[in-house]
Image 1 (cartoon, one colour):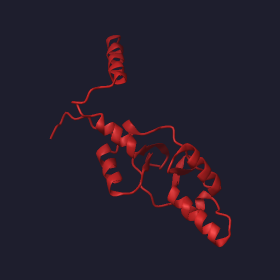
Image 2: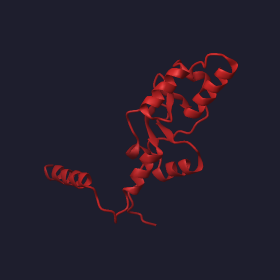
Image 3: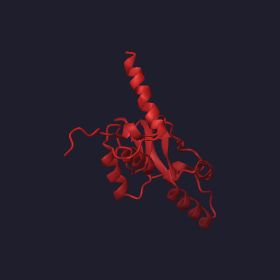
Image 4: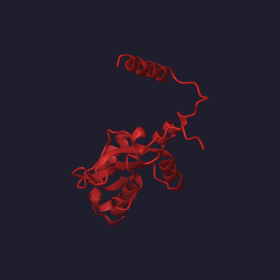
Length: 157
């Protein structure tokens, strides 16, 4: 086992700017926002705490049922999943990768101990962070510049 391997955590790879839905958001408005942004789902937040997840699957179920029953589709809180995976900021990315491999979810909220939303991790975020750790790949020009800038900052202290 390589004991010198950098341990990457959820905090290293998560997106900090997260699109969220409020519980009272009408389903049709939520669907419109998800489609415009190209997201498959979003955390549902009350205050700063994650209370659910609303996905394309939830929306499809809500809209199809409403159309069949000739009723309005309601709000996000009526159709969101309350049983969903979350990870903490210190969760190892290999653990997050396992979660994605074993489950059909595409994104997972990153929360603190009070379930306050800190960020979100997508499959591609984890894939990008893990694949960047292979030493034999060529670094991009941006990565080389970033490393150079870090060296320059270190030289000035």
